[in-house]
Length: 264
Ligand SMILES: NC(=O)c1ccc[n+]([C@@H]2O[C@H](COP(=O)([O-])OP(=O)(O)OC[C@H]3O[C@@H](n4cnc5c(N)ncnc54)[C@H](OP(=O)(O)O)[C@@H]3O)[C@@H](O)[C@H]2O)c1
Image (cartoon, rainbow, N blue to C red):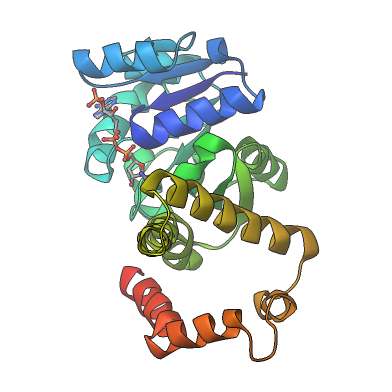
């Protein structure tokens, strides 16, 4: 099985590194392309062992699964370039390009007289796929359950993966892709607070990173609602509830929800 990654930049590279780290793909089975000479040098340095190149057609011809990971505004020209070598009977096509719908992709891919329809997926992963703790949303067009399971399994090696309908992708992107930045902003804010409370910046950074990681781990392991888990660490009249209430007075929950709605 060969996977072509057309456009191996931040996201394509994160997926490739994640798949290799997870052990679900051998580097030699990944056919990774970029546009520029500098991109190719970077690719060879950061993803040793993959078949790196600039020939999209060759990569697409050899692959069983083709992952389109160029910027959205290059999707049309890349599809035009690889279209003559695609075989819709055997190849799955996945686009990670934000904002390009399955219908638009199908229109770009299919010639009007073409009887065979492309087996198409949109996947929206977040950058944490690189550390195998990502979130990926998948939706499909013209795909069987078996083909969908194949694409699900590809991303499931990189973290939590949800097959959903296309309408949910914008909300999913806000929650999980923008959510990485939102979570990091909380971490930065807590770090700055930690420094004011007397820790050195690097100590504060590690403390907060592990605290956030641990909080997520506790919820994932227990399946508890966060508020139930909060009750467990909140003593009546104690310091935790004072801190929580002070944060809420400054609009913590409302700020998070407003941010998510603005991103969507
Ligand atoms: N970053 C995220 O969190 C995220 C999340 C979900 C989805 N996405 C989607 O992922 C896609 C890529 O975003 P990115 O942040 O990874 O962009 P990026 O870092 O700029 O990577 C794009 C890559 O595409 C290559 N490229 C450009 N034109 C090409 C062509 N004609 N043939 C082959 N390769 C070509 C570039 O090559 P050079 O290196 O030579 O310039 C670059 O390596 C976007 O569509 C975006 O919507 C990103």
